[in-house]
Length: 135
Image (cartoon, rainbow, N blue to C red; front, side, top):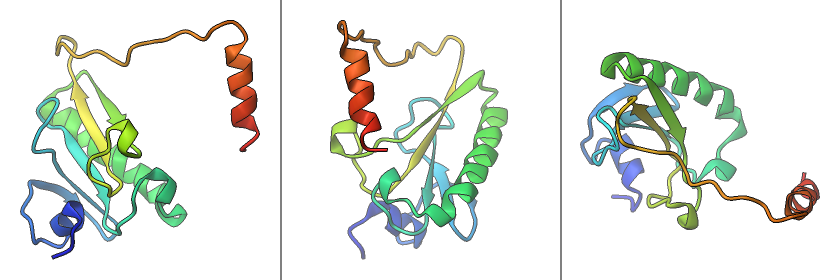
């Protein structure tokens, strides 16, 4: 058995509540959902995170995310959804196999978004310039 939990789920060695599968992707319910219907969409081929994700699958990924998100929204009667991905340990990624969270949201679910911070004077331009250097 491979050490990757999600690879073991894809191969059927570990059971899951599968909701979608095609040649490239697999979707299943998160065991520890933020809200009912919280779904994970993963590539069947192991890759660590978004930066490791195969370019050839990017268009197909977006189509699968839209298809699954629409089904989750309709099934849960959600008012909206969050689409998220943690990349690297510092971001909260626990399983190092690329995965996307589709989290149904409801008007009064008690959840909030990220805390906002403000740039200090001149910091926004400096930050922009540092990022642009790498594009």
